[in-house]
Length: 72
Image (cartoon, rainbow, N blue to C red):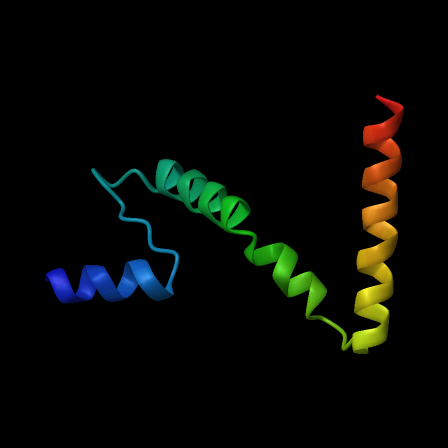
């Protein structure tokens, strides 16, 4: 049992349903997906971006962050 739990914690998002309460387990699962950044990663990987475009986007985001922090 411990090996299975260890494997599930490392590789998958795992939620145990307790007392047949599926709604609570579903909300917990949604929270874990949101906090893990899984959906964000899937959206980023939906289309291939050339490395130069990745760098360009990273620089743009950095400039925006710096501008916002300097304004405050």
